[in-house]
Length: 497
Image (cartoon, rainbow, N blue to C red; front, side, top):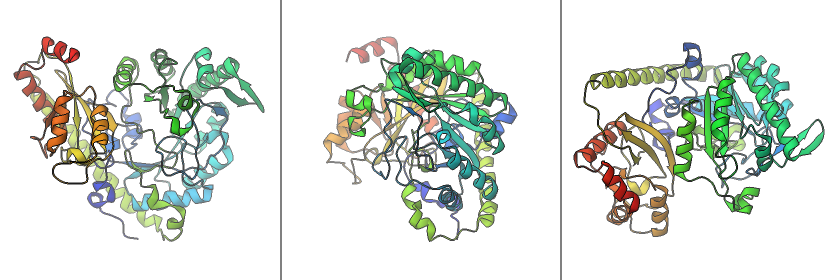
């Protein structure tokens, strides 16, 4: 089977961070040891830098779960939702290995195979570890990861360490059983269903014990936390401090997904998710104690491709059965591509450091920070029409520089090239999704959205097409500062508008 050239893969023209380099903020991994950096530099879920270049996939081999979460509703044979716990095909370990090798041969940037559901992998130990055993033998160049709620983690640590698994994600939403009882109605522990505070206390104890055992063995731990307004939002800063003290190296605070149509308890009961400002404020509050992950896409349990895209439809089992894979040859080609990507990443880091050094003596601005939304379809440049964007990247410009903050998904409302005249309700939703941003940078924009953005207090800007994202963001920021738009009186006027 002919493998695609790196710059010609379908991912290069797809949406999401799969295609575009989101730009880079300060070196997210700069404080880590060389050993840890080597483990995560090509892991898209652990390194903000790597997620611009490398792909991951999840295999859905673990249907059962040992706890109930108010924010979860597992769905099978579902292709219409993009959130954790949803899959289109439940696989056997043999099918999972075959699918993994097919994806790795066809998407050579794929470096990581994770098992994350649709239930809990460690509540399905036979299926999970059989998959890992086969992959360790048949595809030794692929990193293996697991994501778990942590209830069965302590008893699984020894087995995890046998399979060269050096990355584990634990979902820890609280360290207080009273709060936990509001999130978890029950756990299944030692063949009994245990409810309320008692069940939450056992879960928390197991999570913390498992975290300590993993870090003692040198296994990297990322902690996921779901931000639930009014339940654990004020508590997660404490969670961040505790898990960092116990050795976790990355914290991913995710927004609650609670639409009623998903059928979760929180969705049906009307529990709201956090606003963009609430989420970013909490992430900033936690970042003083823990390195924060801001590029998470809350992937399906059968996600395939680079973050921000899902190519699962290309790799259904009926299509894979028709493929002939020479994996030994694929590994050789993958190695060449991975080395080329690593060289490019290192080159860009060096260039960025050199540029920063050259501007070190420039006088620092005394201005407030500004959020800007970016429409991009690839290569780390502003190259997408506003109306064609399915996702906007949010950057903060400040006197300290430019940093990536988050992504905001939206609907594709325009299929034309010029005026984007239809789809007003979708356009309005898009503008609402950009709340808090003061500028939108895109390659082109139609008259109607231009006017509506201005009415919403967001300035459209199409003057930096094909420019690197961070350079353009800082250029616009300096223009705003020179025009007096960033002083405090202007900020107060905007807040009361």
